[in-house]
Length: 235
Image 1 (cartoon, helix red, strand yellow):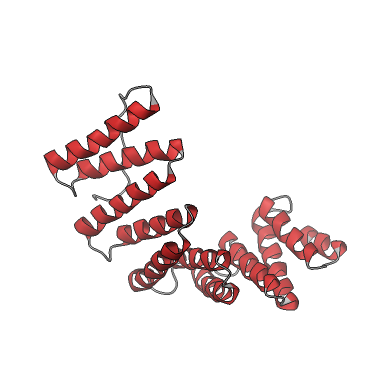
Image 2: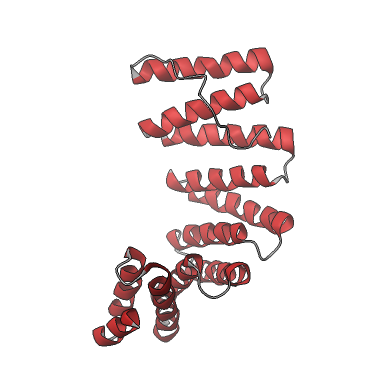
């Protein structure tokens, strides 16, 4: 499939050693692929992805974003605007927009991805929860704590339907929901979710896992007694 995972040797493995020269060669490869095979061809997609990987190594996030947007456009043109691979690209573009600080655009992109994800996968698919979490973190960074709370709560419902009651993704949702409730000053509710997060992380990763320690530290900041926290981790 055109926008699927590409395996095998890269046609761009023989490049100059200089990073700037490599970038120039890869950009030329994109132009050549477009001219010879068309703007939405597999060859153009391969060339864009090779350029993307190079820019990622160099930390050029605006360039990576531009490549991701181009990958999305190719997927949308070849597979359709409501294909699951197109959705993956929309979510990726949203994450990159957020990474470069363009949060308003990221928020709009994640909202679009959430609507599309629900249409493609339905309300009980884990990837929908991933998108809702991305919405939540973006809203939280923008200072919309009630909005973030609502998205984390939706993500928790979706992941519970997808995984049941014990899965690391449940722990993530519980932790984020508890953390934003703590920011909102709802201490008792926050502690309840963080205790559940601690239980999930302890069961799935063990008492020494970084996520377990993260939940324990969050509970400690809320004033949970150390003995109570340690007892939950040792249970």
